[in-house]
Image (tube, rainbow, N blue to C red; front, side, top):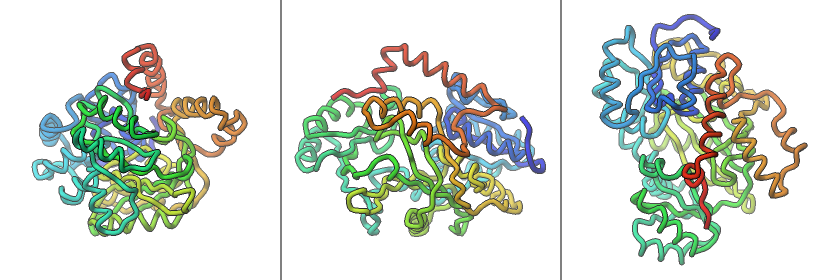
Length: 405
């Protein structure tokens, strides 16, 4: 793979390579001539077919297995590495054992209590509400009795989701959140899924289509100063209404930017940060949906495509290099697309009569960053297509992706 810029001695260790954001991170840094070492737990994952890593280590990516893998790797490194966790479980593990790793790795994280608060949906909501940040009405359910009480209190529709998607949850379902129409459906979800999580969060549904979902990616230095920021919004998501972005575009929204930076400054966050914010289409209010911190997100690639070198800014800041020039958003209208998921989303909207073929084509036009496709690194894209076809043919895997009330 051809690379740009001067060679770098400090490698980047990408933990959670076997994820979309892990693959994107490895590609972005390798393209800046940074040597990349990947750590993955699933050697069958499509991202592990990439050609940008100098080495891939297969080990656990959370808990003591990850800690041991990093401690073993550390003395083998010729220079101190930049450690880039790519999933919440990676972030929490690395935060908890950072003292054991500091001799070999640069780590961009705030104190552990801040990380725990920002990654735990229940703790974050309590914090945000106490500080006057706009968050949706939220209830926590830890028992059948609480589920019955909350079911009678909530207004509908509402959203039900686990505070953290544990390994047990992910092994049994791929569903991120449920849109609930009434009290009986809320209780049905509790009865079916409670054995895979110790609690649920029930939140008021914020009115608005996919395009009212905004995000802000940023990198804050050790003093909490934002060195790079990037605002975007969703155009479509998969699964529809409660899934992850499959088509997005950069945009300018100063309210989203200011709300993100105010949140991170007040709680003392450092490192990579991301906040998802929804604008209520009826009231016009902006409401914080959730933060993701300490790691890249799927939208990191759209920042890079839009001229904001978010991840490379982090790398340069941690290794003492001159910061890249590209840290200001220029609003060129760049888009980000996950081709397979966007096709699935578009077909669903088309069947509902909410999207025409012409509308879909127009929405995809323009300069783009791709979630998985790369002409210079094509194997992960085709491996993802093949794996998706295999899962579609598996009745058990299909059941994990669908909830039928």
